[in-house]
Length: 57
Image (cartoon, rainbow, N blue to C red; front, side):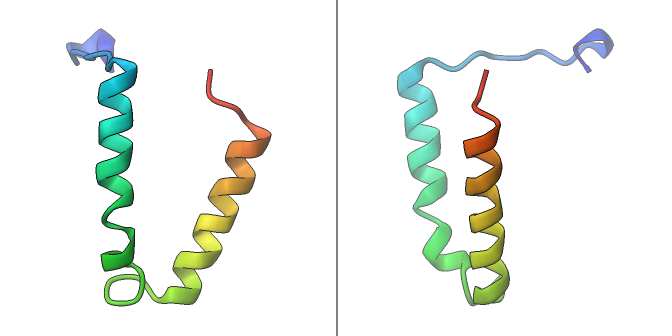
């Protein structure tokens, strides 16, 4: 996508942590009212397994 003009802005570690914290603060509002709790829980479990098997570069 960068080849087509997308500008990528690299985040600092502090900015990345702030973004992650903000995103995680929404989880309780999403689980149940937006996404059924069982589906949400299974998705989060699979995500954790994937991340454990594929560490970020």
